[in-house]
Image (tube, rainbow, N blue to C red; front, side):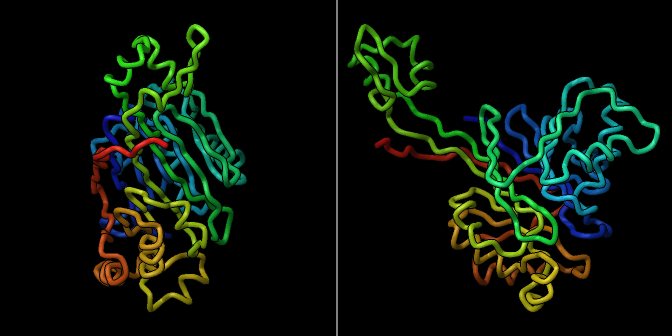
Length: 310
């Protein structure tokens, strides 16, 4: 289980930027692993404003290849090369990822001096990053698009009294935690034999652009944070859905059904100068709705309490 998980909203607008509202980009730090979800134009500058170093980026997850979600890549990739990056970078995206990202790497006369691993994500795929998984779900947008879920692994809490009572060797506890069972001198020990319970991992879901998806409440179930497309308010629902997006009211309905702890509204249409109409719309359905704002930082607290093992 990670010690710290922090969300930094770098850009929260949609389609086109406006003063004080950059294009989609969300940084999620899990201890020493920095992840970026989408990379709108100007993301590198937003990193500089935030104080989070883009040089420590390990993984970038692109939800889809509309310009407002990935055109920050060429500048970001070239700046990292200019500053002497040598560490590999992983970039994930939906169908077409290899072509779009290779084109972004080869724009102009710049030269990328480090290795970039590009992964095409088929919806339903999951990736293991040690302390957490990244899971994926197909969106309902106008182009191939993916929702990502960052899910911290559960931690089995060991009860030392149980360990001592059954005489299990302490030096093999990590092996037991990893394998689930260990055989010693012909006797099989199971993890539940020494477990007090489970500390459930934290969960962050980032949708990118999508119409309401019927499977989203299950996918986002019990998330600590759901960052959902809320392009317009409910008075604009026919229009917002036609263009492949979700209203603030519809996102709140999803958050309520999913039993998430917090909903952050995201990907605001540039038509809105005052976002309170979106917030009021969402809170009428789901009170734990909040506005994401440029450079807003959100720390995800460790869970309290333990769930008993079956």
